[in-house]
View 1 (cartoon, rainbow, N blue to C red):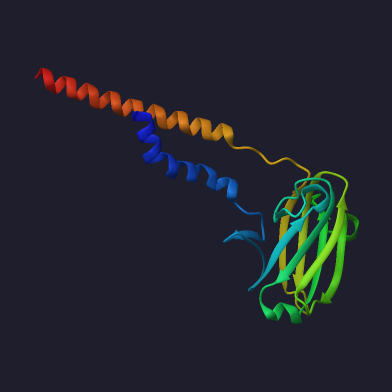
View 2: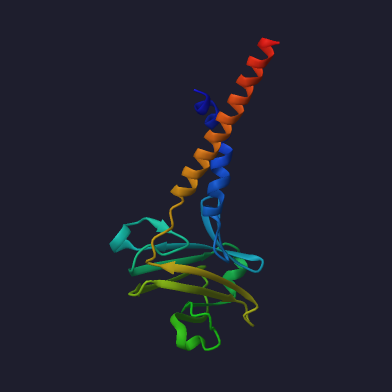
Length: 189
């Protein structure tokens, strides 16, 4: 009974705190009101990924869940982006970006997308870590760099939640036993 009351009182805020680390975004990508945004300086693009043969029409906007055919669509939110050349490059994350051509797996040269949509498709065959580079502007002055993984299962935070639950329960039992002991001492006096 006490544990249930404590979980009801503290469980929600503590659970939210524990999970907040799992919801952090990668680099230039952010989840904002269920919308995946890629930030390019003062501009934003909506970012959506699909793997239709694997997950049907289910969307993702950060890590790519499985290997295989992947469709990515980036949509300009501000109209100014529709008038700028946009370049997209996906590279293997080797830690060395000095020779971009050697690590590039997808490259869309600078082009103005009047529709505002920048689509590309690629079939990932090897799991690993990658970096997306999106550049906009006549001199490439707006850049977004976002790391992501492909085909690497997400880490589960169940063990953290279990530890948190045990800690909350132990704290509740400790406080309950102290209150009970004080009442017993007060009754004897």
